[in-house]
Length: 480
Image (cartoon, rainbow, N blue to C red; front, side):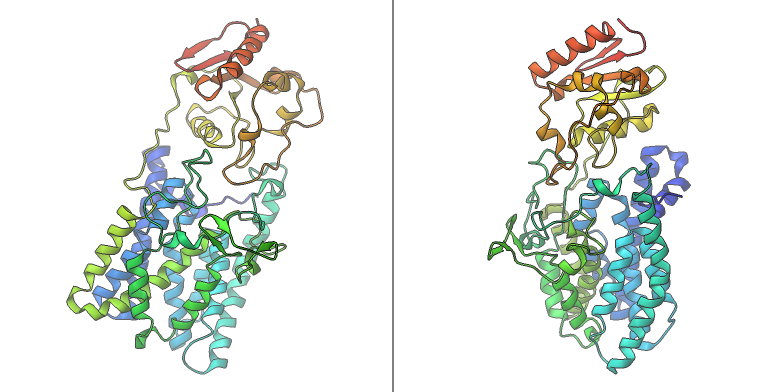
């Protein structure tokens, strides 16, 4: 049994599959976004006791810049912010009033089902909220109940994930997991407030505009959260939110896309306990996802702060949305993606498809997207430049020997981990490997690369079988 990264979103998409692949995926995301706003509204209503407070909380944690960035990037498992708002609500019920001890562990398990690290974030924020009103030992015991019983639900999922990434058939094997090391970007302090198209890391400049790391919180939400920090009803989250905010700064201090260096190394922060060497979240590349649990905490404090405006409090929520959608780095309106494959894939012969050039930046993602519609296997996976069997085969090596490989082996800011070629093993060439077609994307090649590659294909397989603008296909079973 292999673990799938987004079982909740996949279940929603499965229920909507009659809409087709693109609309069912989009529909699942829309439902999760609506649930995020709904859960945050419920959280605000329970703590603030007013509709206006609930509305502000929903506006901060629901249609946030972070969530818009997640939608743009296609990280469907991170769209489940709703489960984090729900966890915070039932956790406060248990810590403050001793109600329903079983609810926080259950929702913590549900958060891990949504995204395993969301479940771990819940355990950490529960520990942060040990600092709160009431008798200290009572609060510690209640947090221990949540973490202890919640871990019983999360641990089997962690073991399943571990077994999956170690499995020979894993889409993302453990050795290709990007992970975080002290030379990679952390959570940039400027990213919490930087406007417009400022990204850290600057993924569009690195060749992958389809992935945007957005952790913008906004000046308005932060200002009203500061006002709400001293509110009487903020007592249960006041200092716990501060502790989580420090953890949310990530594993190292980063400002303006640069890690702050002291004594020859980056300044470590408490978040390093989660992402450093040997830590449970080390395999996760970018720690900006910590902001997902910051959002309901921020929304709750901003809702309490907005009460100072009386009947004008709902305006705070509207301004927060305007800032998130119009002034933050989040791309709005969202950029659409056409999942339909180009005509060059029409009437494919049996067998897998090799798209050239392989490129870990945007091209490999397009090849995988089109494979959903044309239904043929492709030799690419998440963070994998090309499958090992092709990197061993001498015919494939000969075809690709003139490509400029270094920029194509690097995925965004992740250092290249795969050697372009492996020790030679004879697999019988493309036909022996089960390939039925090769598609050359000329617009992704330099002129010299294109000429040499197409000459070799012509010598080996004869004239192309189909031409569709800048895309040329050879059906490799036909021979010259």
